[in-house]
Image: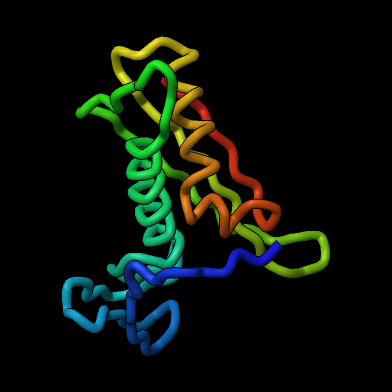
Length: 140
């Protein structure tokens, strides 16, 4: 099912040249990165790293918006470790897989999963990846 935006809250605009061995910059200049192929000799970041940071940051924001009864506050020292894997498929194509490890100090197991499960329903990155790539979660 395609999700249609009713009200645009923000639009990111970037310009990339040179592909995986190139350069990327946001229209406002806040992002300005050299790009390198994963495992290559370049000194830049790669799209998988950028995706990992974007997904984990968005996911943490979604956890803060999860409504639970009673309310669960996301601890200030919460950390999300994101692993984005790039691999090949049986048909010779490429695919991504994501693992998010969410550390929520001071919460019990049920509270942790309530936030993670709720965020997975809210997060735009989760919506974009659902049914398209493997996404798994663990908590600590």
